[in-house]
Length: 298
Image (cartoon, rainbow, N blue to C red; front, top):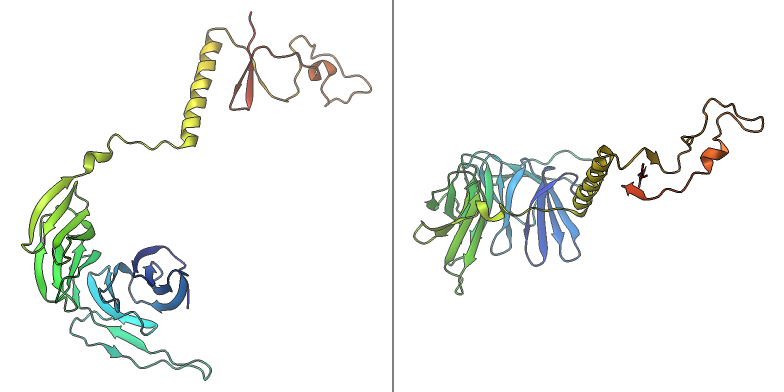
């Protein structure tokens, strides 16, 4: 068993299990709440959407080719997605292994349905007696199919102008009826009447965050320090401030004669006593705790 080594793109969850998959094409099953890895399976294609069936026994996967697959939660570790929808579920010939290693058969899965573009989202409408599988793609299509025979299409929900990236079923108190919500690249969220396969409402969401701006602490501190620095620059231009001096840096005082040679007991690279004994700065203005500006009245 192997843990994910690359970005996790989609997950599915029940009360006791968590299913995850990502760019590494691993399909991992975790036990909750300990998050203990139970099984790791290799997929032949990268999954773009993942869902657990209403009975909790199967995993529904959509890939970047638009195909939809239905596989058991507990199954073979090696899975190959077949491209032919008419191909039956079959077990291939196991590969040759050493005596110490058991054979690992490869399972070829046929798709139960598909789209003509990248599949982006999946959700279930768990109505009785036959649940509905809702799938969406990058070509603005939302489709309702009967599960597990997803080739049996119930209806299409058309109206999006851009890609559909998210689906949500909101049931009423009975659980048998409700509304389907879809959203994506459009400026609106779509609310659908599934029974009539009609659009009930559009909720405009583009302008909701127009007046919001997140300003972290560091950004606020930077803005404040920039204002202080600009204020000091204005004072320099007006003749109120002179000569910035680095804190702790040795320097020669303005009255010192730089042409004088060091004494015999003093090395050439050592500062003079007049420089080390700096006069007190009054008043003192510090910017970012690094540069100190000596402000003196002329």
